[in-house]
Image (cartoon, rainbow over all chains, first blue to last red):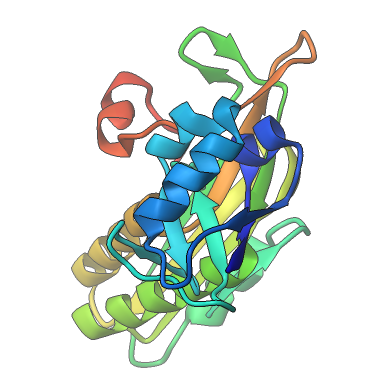
Amino acid sequence: MTIRVKLFAAMRDLTGDEVVEVEVPDGATVGELRRALGAQIPLARSLLVRSGVAVNHDLVENDHALSAGDEVAVIPPVSGG
Amino acid sequence: MFRLTRDPIDFHALTDSVRDPHCGAVVLFLGTVRDLTGEQVTVFLDYEAYGPMAEKKLAEIEADVRRRWPVGEVAMVHRLGRLDVGDVSVAVAVSTPHRGEAFEAVRFAIDTLKELVPIWKKENAPDGTGEWVHQSAPASRERQRPENS
């Protein structure tokens, strides 16, 4: 399945895109998505390991299983305030 | 009440909006753009948010505040876009019957906002370079590099 991943701040600047499409097996976990994303965008790897992954607006662990149609985003360390 | 906005924050109106006949205390916190972070001079900041998730997290913080303290009203506003030194980037106002609860609730709300809400700032230096702030451990950064808010 294809997962559309939203990118923000330095993660978007490193990649040059606000959304990247990542191909993963059906039922893939967030951990698998991270590996696929890292392979696709080597420049983003070091920030990716320090970032969270949000599915449908909540941070999830690496064992979380993805579904087609999930809203997925990489959340680099936040700095609001 | 919570809001993300690209407009200047009217913190007088925000403060008024939380006043309540049952509450004897109103506490307002403002975060403002600081010109120095350590040795680094900042000319302006850019703030961006993951809007739908930021609003969900702000709603959760508001619900938490209401659960933990006898709040009359709570209001949180974060500004996005370009902010110059001295501008107000975030405002949190809370009313409660007594002052101790209002101070505690505001402290909790701003600390939790800074920890959980997906908003990012980019520090822009006088030489035209800019850098997104992505420290991994906000708690320890707080000690090494005092934050603006």
